[in-house]
Amino acid sequence: MRCPRCDGADNRVVDTRTSRGGRAVRRRRECLECGERFTTYEYVEGRTIQVLKRDGSAEEFDREKLVKSLQIACAKRPVSASQVETLADEVEDELSRQAGVEVPSSLLGEMVMDGLKPLDRVAYVRFASVYRNFQDIEEFQQFVDDLNARQRQEAEAREQEELPLS
Image 1: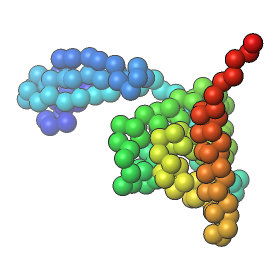
Image 2 (image 1 turned 180 degrees about the vertical axis):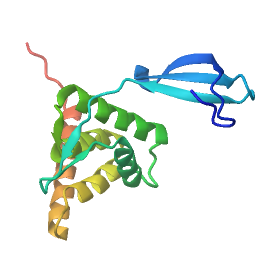
Image 3 (image 1 turned 60 degrees about the horizontal axis):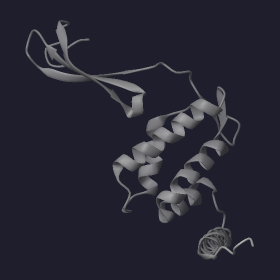
Image 4 (image 1 turned 180 degrees about the horizontal axis):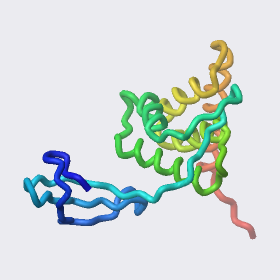
């Protein structure tokens, strides 16, 4: 590992910790030539996941693109950067677990929406409006009405009193 300051190759590891929920190893290093401390990360090289787009084309899964779209959906909402990173990690992990080499963009979009829904309702609607590509206001209104109806049903189900069996 070369020092980012002096480009020296001699360094020692000062501290080692797991990072990203155990999916990475974080190492603090010290350059033996100039004394600069820097951090490196080790990741398991995973298989490349291809996202199959609606138009039939394919592109490599890009975690940064996912994080950016989550940040846009969560802009000016009470969602922290760590929550966005955690959701991106969860989606990426789920893709790796259940998906093959090729993943339809629809599956990826549904995973993101499933993660955003309990996190922040406005961010969920923002993401869905772009992902679902509503063509007019009526489609969008129908989506919001359905969301409100499901939320009311869930609230009613939670509030219902359980009756004794005997």
